[in-house]
Length: 102
Image (cartoon, rainbow, N blue to C red; front, side, top):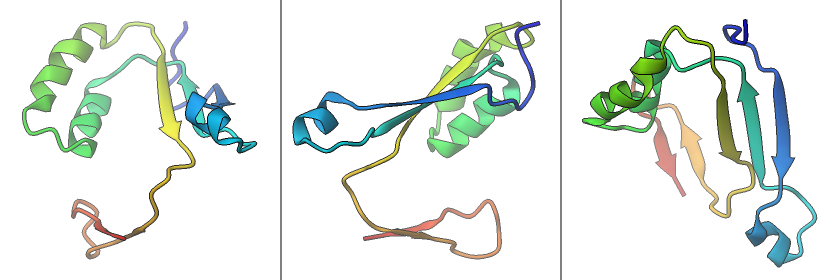
């Protein structure tokens, strides 16, 4: 079976053309490979995390046909953003939006 719940199998680091053009000697993109197809919980987390008001329906249409099937996910992450700031907790409620400041 190709899928394995909650298992990170591989990751890699890459330099975008922006990083290469800047002359900096470090990668700015991290790619995660997870051997699992999207599930209902992943879809709901994406919609919530991306603050998609009607996005859950769009993601449902895209992801639900693959639920319960073997598959994999590739997740890119920007690891050296140009922006700087601070993210703090608003309160003890884990569902509260964070406070984001510069």
